[in-house]
Image (cartoon, rainbow, N blue to C red; front, side, top):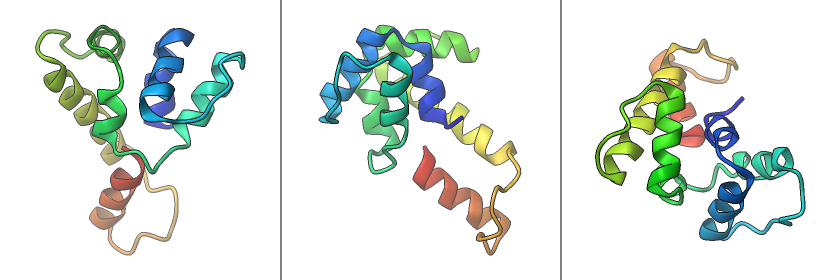
Length: 115
């Protein structure tokens, strides 16, 4: 499961719809939440900061709580915590493809596209 899908799965369907609208991603609101989450999780063209900034502060706090992160602070701090958590997961995860020439380089590329 991608970090985006993990984050979106924590939220209520209404929040997922709001995130899609803020990001300008065309969706059909009557679809099941799992379909909406999948559509948004596949959008690697949206920068991680922009993606997480589309969440409300309350939604970010909920995500932080579920991920075991501190929930206090400004919205920017919450965004940084979630990005840091997701980056740690990518560093700890073994490489999934042999396309990365250097171990560190593969993590950086994965982070740029996934986070």
